Length: 261
Ligand SMILES: Nc1ncnc2c1ncn2[C@@H]1O[C@H](COP(=O)(O)OP(=O)(O)OP(=O)(O)O)[C@@H](O)[C@H]1O
Ligand SMILES: [Mg+2]
Image (cartoon, rainbow, N blue to C red; front, side, top):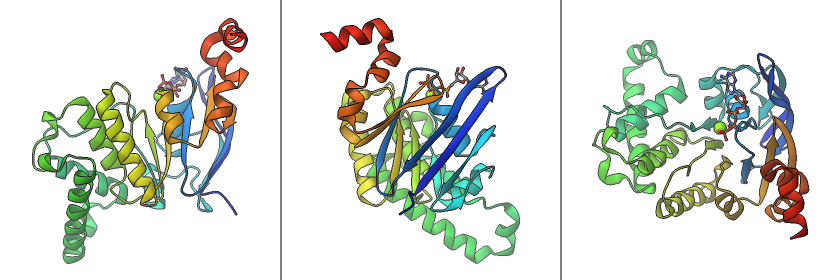
């Protein structure tokens, strides 16, 4: 069986720097896969390329057999792959409900012309989007704020809104870039529960995170990047003791110390 997401030889260079270096991996349908690595190891750049927000210099990738290479972000989203951003983006002056409706529209790529031509169809789509948005706000515990401006949200609540926005269009695969960075432990547990629920409802997830405990508890498979290259790919138990991973995180001396107690 072919994997839901197949990434082959992804490469991205910035000037002299190879930010992503010939990275290949698969994500099976139904999985929650962790993507970890030190700062600057190429995690966000990999996502940026796969989701169409940065042009890659090499490689191919596909979702459910559909080639996504070189498609624009909204086309990739329509094909079923969406993402959240490391730096939370919300429209502060819009309500939470409106923020999610905008997210749906961005991912569906609906412009103003079809809105004029197919008024009734678009109104039906808008009603469906509102129902979906209210549903998701309830899932992430923000239902009470549906009609409040996003400006009033705390940092952790913004992270939850970002997760809801990334799954508005019912993607087959969603990539979350640091969903719990800078979030307090109570909110981390809530976000973990939300991710599990989404997964149970059928979403496949790739999660980029520095919170290793969070990743190890959620994911049965973890991919590790270092200096743009994939250095490990396997279950948490193997990743934790992999000498290359320890060296990447702790430096060589630290890894030897950890290995020999
Ligand atoms: N727009 C850009 N222009 C030039 N260099 C960039 C750009 N974006 C990223 N880089 C470089 O590419 C490398 C990988 O960066 P990236 O943001 O992908 O790392 P990351 O693994 O997401 O790190 P972090 O954990 O800190 O978010 C870094 O050396 C970074 O400086
Ligand atoms: Mg990053």
